[in-house]
Length: 502
Image (cartoon, rainbow, N blue to C red; front, side, top):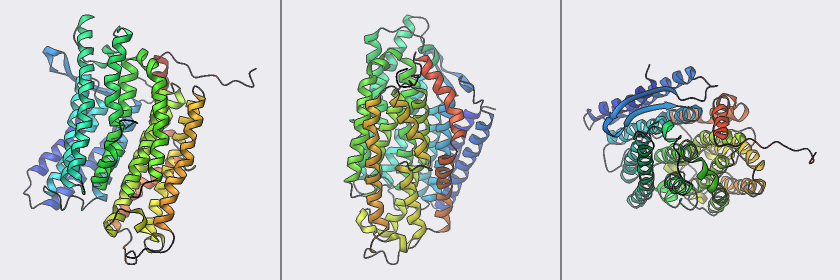
């Protein structure tokens, strides 16, 4: 079965079905989107069961001529890293739809347009993780900007238009740099054989160090903007604050992973020598992101901006693990991408419910929620504990692997980055104390707790956070082989621990 093509087509077909509905059938559009995304999630799980976890080759490969005269193909295939990220994406999408059942109402456009955009976005995300043709990857990379732009600008709040434009400008700028590098690779491939955009063929090209450095920067800056990594992060807080909670989950929980995924699949694979050249600089920027994002989060007064700032810090950890050039670092970074998706989803979804009930996003307005809305309060508390990597919850395992993997090669960076954990305790526990405990703030006395739909939506997210905190093996068994293979391809071996210098 052509799993990957089917997974991309299902959301598109769902979007077409919704587009054919009368504008008045908003409720049916919601159900159609929910059923479609659940079908995509179920089919992805079926595909995952057939995945050969010990193989480092691309699996479920499909290749069709697209623009034959330029050597462009519709070519897809996934390794363990891509599989994990696709799983994360397709599981979170129906949860976002169910959790934000009424988010589409009151927007600039109809309810059905909202769900068409989400389904198109899901198809683009699957495509960007599965593409094995670099030009196809670029098409998906740029195309997914369109639904996000309209989701923020059409259904967000506050300065949503400005936030959407800022997001688009940053992303397009990075995309243009990457396009220039892709064209450079295409020209070089023609000089050394046939013109091609095939990823595996391009990885075998002989490229001079200067050219490789320039091409690397074109890809890396695009991915650093998407991630986001300091100093390319400034679009994120505005976009997260302006978007609906569901849009923010899609943006920070799913789309941002395209940046760090791209660093692994494209920067490291295509430009191994340039990767080694720029690694020390990237390590420094990663550590700065960890600390800078944490300090911004500590000072945040708006709950959505707080979550956005924590993500800047978390992506610093992910990038640190990628460029530590150790198996543990790589495995931890990939696991961190998955875990961050769920912990951020939980934070944004619960925060969205808190904001809709209170009519405010200011943290100090939520005092005493533990007594008034215990289920919602404890859900936020558990999500926050996962975000600060509390042992027993999913983020702890990934953060531990990143720090251990980094320490074996860059001990100073790992030690400094560890302070990010201390700061995380501050930026989570302080708002938890203000919002959940203490005296009940005026206006909170009659707030309602989570309803059945909201409990059903948040339950699988919480279950994943707890389950993977105690038993991450199902994901690590898929991630570890490709992580080891990537490190070996770059010519690195894991440092051997010494015993007192003997």
